[in-house]
Image (cartoon, rainbow, N blue to C red; front, side):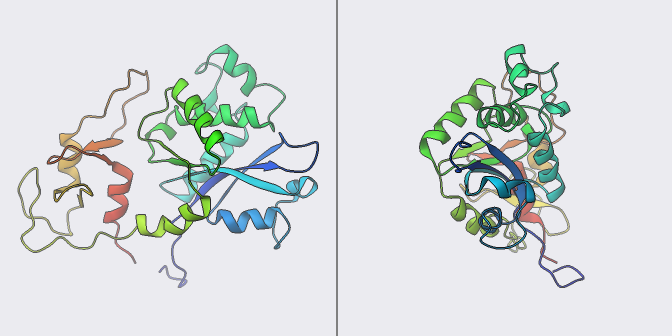
Length: 261
């Protein structure tokens, strides 16, 4: 809880809506929210506070969400870039091929094809390519299409494309942000073999019994190279467990160490 007695938000996502109004089926809308299911109801006028710009094209369906943002501010940054790929430095004309920039900078900013292309371009660009993001899409055909497009644009492999129900993702989000708790008495770092304590950030592998100081894990892991020209992050995007060598998402490990207030 913060000083106001309100629990901190553990989930924030950006979402893509498509209008179901006859004649406007390719018209889409990008937004961000801590509660995608409630936000969809607002856009459809079932409850108050829907965006004014979406009222004339009701009803809407939610095609997908992007989640896993390290903060609300980062989600808002992603939202603005996704809404305005023709203005964002993350999809600048210098960083994408001409045939891609022609779409991103073209007049069809509210069309589905433009937003899906912009999504792939953004996920391959810094800083978004270093974040522990995931895309949840309930339509299997659309999910496969978005995944294939992302592969063409060399989106990093740690970014997941999940054919799953959006409501389920939202409901399970608090479990993924649960505090790991203090280390067990006598538990040592699997890398430096020094005793673990809460004063020094630590984490644990979900695939085996290994645990480590976060500093030791970062130092022992070199970021995986995908052959792209992206700059290397200061911290690893994907770490490798020192014991079982399973991939460990750095963002998830850090979240598990944060103690509840």
